[in-house]
Image (cartoon, rainbow, N blue to C red):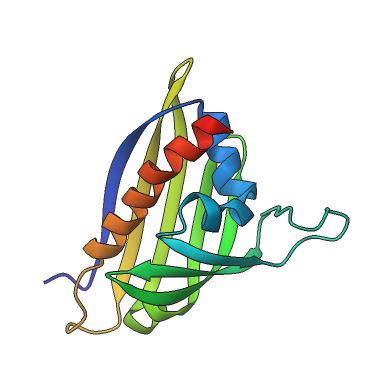
Length: 158
């Protein structure tokens, strides 16, 4: 069994890449309402000057998420790096349940336009286990893919 690796998957989505990217980049406060069966709470340090409830992730922005994985609540603390030009977010794991198992846990989401009203979300997960006893994070990749798919309806209704 590998001690490190990279998973990549592509999720086809209805709606523009811009709409999906905006939701994942700066509208995290909507996640508990939109996909509450996955994410129960999002806490992000907001930048000065923004209205309460509006989240703006910029380079080096930190936050934490309370989510369900395999029926258990877990916490994930992260640092986000944003690339608006390529509609890409890199989420680096810092603390939480996942980081007890992995030394490296990075998620990269890129929203790629396909047609006028559709796009692809390319998800890349880079990981390195703390020891050989830890299973590969395939269940976390399945969770992330499910979150992207389930968010699609909410983005389209917005």
